[in-house]
Image (tube, rainbow, N blue to C red; front, side, top):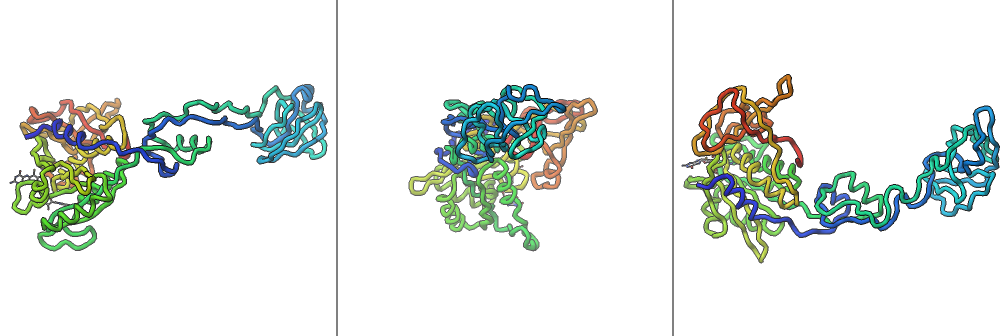
Amino acid sequence: MRTVEEHLAACLAAVSPLAPVELGLLDAVDCVLAEDVVATSSLPAFDGSAMDGYAVRHADVASAGPDAPVSLPVVADLPAGVREVAPLAAGAAARIMTGAPVPPGATAVVPVEDTDGGVATVLVRRAVREGLHVRRAGEDVRPGTTLVTAGTRLSVRHVALLAAVGRERARVLPAPRVAVLSTGSELVEPGRPAGFGQVVDANSTALTAAALDVGARATRVGIVDDDPQRLMSVLEGQLEGADVLITSGGVSAGAYDVVKEVLSRLGTVEFHKVAMQPGMPQGLGLLTRGGHSVPIFTLPGNPVSAYVSFEVFVRPALRRMLGEAELHRPTVVATATQGWSSPPGKRQFTRALVTTDDDGRPRVRPASGPGSHLVFGLAGANALAVTGEDTTSVEPGDVVRCVLLERGRR
Ligand SMILES: Nc1nc2c(c(=O)[nH]1)N[C@H]1C(S)=C(S)[C@@H](COP(=O)(O)OP(=O)(O)OC[C@H]3O[C@@H](n4cnc5c(N)ncnc54)[C@H](O)[C@@H]3O)O[C@H]1N2
Ligand code: MOO
């Protein structure tokens, strides 16, 4: 039997980040940047007005006050987007809008609220200090500044910056394409009635959602019944368009466990028992076609086993492919308020509910019994409480490490 660490190491070794690609900014959001982005121009690009008002020389309005307005002739009208701006002579004002270039010679902008709003001449009712309401060229970004470094996951805010400096595209690690399929002749499509002995396919939806949540481009392929030929041809059909394949079911010891049967023959996929509960039977390997090799994770069919296997092995592998430095979810050490038992020799991942007490200290209790088919309790959990191979029971008051299952990338 393999340890969890041994199988995780094998899973991580089976994947690597994809080759960088140039993507439009909207497609690059959430991808890891594969280049340093360096500014080639200034932001703002020119001295501009931060207010609708009048560009003046501040010395000309030094004596202005509410009861002592200064009258200046208005010699220009400057909307945002104006392409030519004449220098401002002493003793004159230019009507100016927010975002318009400030004329050479002007040293400040008087907001329209501090004037009479005149068009031919303007009465200025407040003195302004030098530079007031003028946005200086380059005060935000100077050419040569490194704006975002390689390895950064592009947030909406990074993309806003790249767009502002004129970038249309960025070189990023692409999100892996993940194809998810469920195996089992007992399975029926969600939404279809399940007859006696039939089971609704929950895993392909759950695992596709989980892969999307990590940031992969995941597709739910659906159900393949327990027919070796059909399974092989569906898998081969997916190879070209996928960077990762995930299956569930058919990997334990049953007479019709076709995943194990079919893929064992291919040689590069190995099946192991991993010392964990749930999630003991695991398969991992590479499927190759036309020189294109795709890692395949074959997860156990029980829905909780499939989900926990994804969390423990596939999620870190996908994060590695996405270029994330931190592969694992955050954990918290919580005090058990209720006890539970744990199988000897196996690491147990218990569906759990972590809460905080009145003093803000974390508390944990099981959200479900241990059966790998109990999905109701899984939905009520917000954590996996992890107990070691040597632990056979958790008592109230014991401290337990819990993996927090929040939605999203972290
Ligand atoms: N003799 C042994 N039997 C079993 C062993 C073993 O070591 N020896 N291991 C058990 C463990 S642990 C697990 S986990 C399961 C894993 O079995 P498989 O991966 O072969 O999965 P199946 O047999 O196909 O299905 C198991 C169970 O889950 C249901 N299932 C499967 N796929 C889905 C799906 N997409 N959506 C919802 N439910 C699904 C399926 O109907 C079965 O009830 O094997 C134990 N047996
Ligand atoms: O190890 Mo299985 O995954 O208990 O249900």
